[in-house]
Amino acid sequence: RDDPRSPEPPAELAQRIDLAYLKEAAERVEAGEAMPGRLEKIFEAGSSMGGARPKAVIEADGRQWLAKFPLCSDACSVPQIECATLLLAREAGLNVPALKLEDIGEHRPLMLIERFDRIPLPGNAGHYGRKHFLSALTLLARHESESQHASYPMLAEAIAMHGPSSAIKADQAELFGRMVFNILVNNNDDHLRNHGFLWDAIGQGWRLSPLYDVMPVPSYAQERHLHLGVGFAGRLATLPNAMSQHGVFGLAAAQARDIILRIAGVVREWKNTFEAAGVCGQDIDRMHTAIRHPREAGLEALGKR
Image 1 (tube, rainbow, N blue to C red):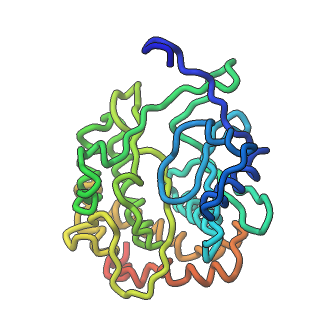
Image 2: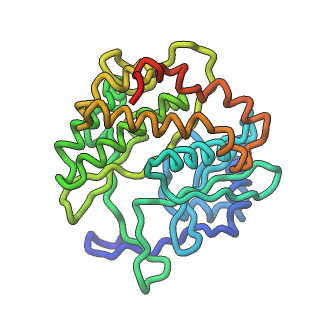
């Protein structure tokens, strides 16, 4: 900007009509090919969103969306599977942003997920206000190399310390539910950058952001682990381990068990959600080793209601 007091310029974001060009650009980058001049302007739309996979911010329906693209080297339709997994999380009662699948050919759709840190400003088309965002890495004041030594109970304690008093119990219960969901779908990329917080100006505290970056990882291992610590048994991805520190999440044993049963009941029927999202049979078969029946994760050890 010209000086520190200059207003933020209006965003010149790519539009839905540009998705095919964005996809072509991503494929050229993946292949190490030169970028033609007609595609260079799409890189001027804003800052990078980071991460290992190609993505871009676009504007559609008066809102900002993060477009997540497939890679030519993908063995399965990654954006479609991620979308189906997030839809499953929503069915399980978790807080998930708006989602869209855009098919721009080759039967490999890309996913649009709404940016929850931007707010359209009324009467100012193309102008957006910001919701201040922190990753859990920043909230816990950790270096990236320390992420694997953090845990969900630590995040629950951070919510109690930094969250608005009126929302602490709800956010701790939501975090507990996300931990349970990650255990059941084997999302072990749950590092501290993949958990976020939004500033609540009214409550004057940090609220847990909507869920993002959830992808099942196929595995034949009987013993599985998440990236973050789960309970007294460390990173071991089992439901009894999730229950072991339920009190840190502000939950009585019966409340924690109810959350587990609610999420387990939805995840048990995951194939229906994936089929409804258009995931092909081959990719569903591929995910079969990732998404476990709750019994395999130790549900029966928790007893009945």
